[in-house]
Length: 142
Ligand code: CMP
Image 1 (cartoon, rainbow, N blue to C red):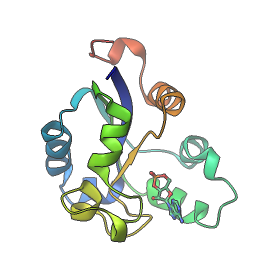
Image 2: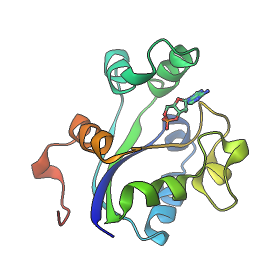
Image 3: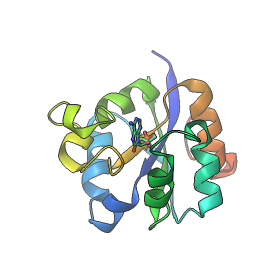
Image 4: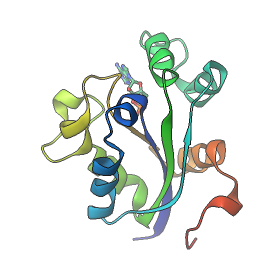
């Protein structure tokens, strides 16, 4: 399996609830390494740009309002098969369907307040990582 990097966001509700450590612990226990991290508060325009693929969907307004209501922790995670592994560690988008032990099963409240975001494919990972990080600020091996 190839070494990969993926983007992870710890969402505002989880930052506010003091759950950063618990969530990062799940990544580390699952074999992923944090190779870049920063706390940022997205502006409305930045959030709309990041989630542009969802523009026009019924949940878009609520998603943008939620993602801008406080700081998030953006991270680059690295490891073998990191994109898929991160998705397994996060669990299903809807926390009601997330498997026991996953981040969303333990930390999420609803479809919108679902604790974390993770890239879903290599092309999106590359774009999403570049949205938050300069290459020089990523301390990975690839
Ligand atoms: P995320 O992985 O950040 O990507 C888009 C987000 O939109 C998703 O997690 C959810 O928080 C939110 N969302 C709200 N409603 C839905 C829905 N019906 N389907 C998919 N995503 C939704």
